[in-house]
Image (cartoon, rainbow, N blue to C red; front, top):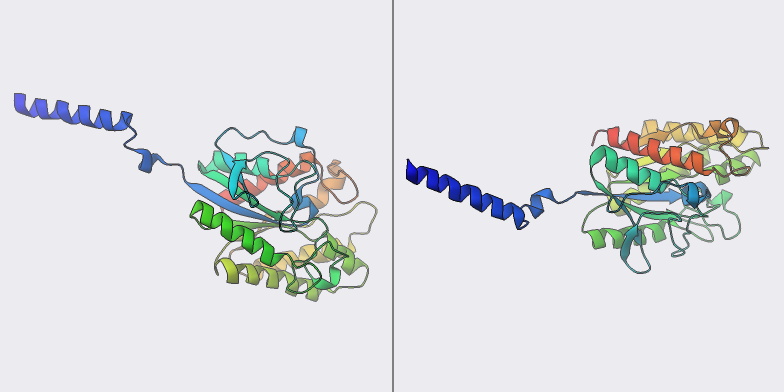
Length: 281
């Protein structure tokens, strides 16, 4: 009896010492989720950093391409690299990172790849604003893949999904008669397929439905939203994760005629996190 008791005591002491010495480091290591943010100016963020969410230390990070490193996720999110841009000055992504961590316990890593004014279809491209089409004066998707691949190598982990916030440029082209609904829809499908050819056939694609613009009839924006909804129904692992941006003018959540203010961006970030966290994996 004494021998059994002694063995038990030694076992308890060993386990305690192992815990204190960090022996459970592997099993308690925090898992990570990498998300790409792609699109145009509202994906970049045109809000105000002083009203953006302050993310607790260690909860979320941004991947920076130029120095191949992580930095704490804080606005202005993003960098001037590979034709992508930093927020001016607030974005949706600190709110997203904080909320996603709250819901999942995972550490969040954001890979920003957005450029203001960029189009989905080449016919909507303006000057040097860029396009997500395979053609055009400044194609962006290959640059995004380059950044994503380096981030994946840095973290030794694949991305968990792409968050897409784009459509105003194409909506204007539709309004102006330069682009059809069918052509825009085909261009969006092409963007998703080319991302998947580069990153994996089943990578989730999360769409924030395009909002409206102040002072312009919503004709083009309505067409874009309907096309985005159809694409989400047609393709697997494509989801609508935010659908209320067209209500922002009535809520006074617009910074100007086309850009969302920080209240809107914070709401997008939190809601998108909730929808993605609730999506079956």
